[in-house]
Image (cartoon, rainbow, N blue to C red; front, side, top):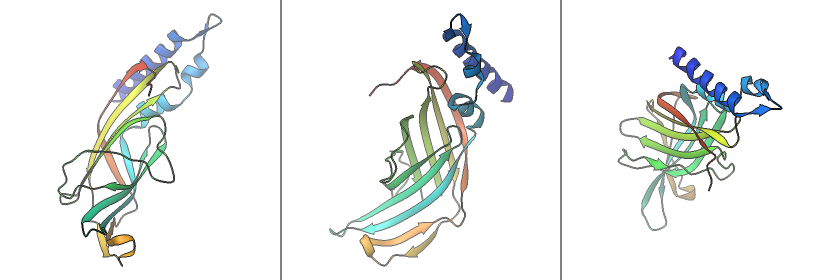
Length: 193
């Protein structure tokens, strides 16, 4: 794996050097500096779950909804993504599209995000797709990584009904490390909306 990562890193640096002559010279200082691309290749071996709160809510129409607030760190980019009150499937097994928290938008480099929360089996997973433009802003490196892991038993307490919350569940640990199962990348033109 280390040899493969070194080969990819060398290829990315060569790509940058070949693509950016400056006055007939190659910009090797930029190509060799650490940044999003290098860190994403070298550091994306796991994602770190930093916040986990699952609430059961009884709505005014007497229906029940399960929602979660999650924060997860991507060591590759150094970003922490916070998803606020996202729907949690009661049966599990459903990959859903991420939604940003109310206070903090998702980073613009995060091109796609999906999550999986299976409370009965204690599984949690994330699929992130992000891009790095630090080597060549017109041709970005698009990364795609998936991590699925197992959560410890959550600790639940009855809610007092404020805001409809009838139960709140958290984890008994401060963080959970989710090992990346697969990661891939490709060089592509800058994504446009």
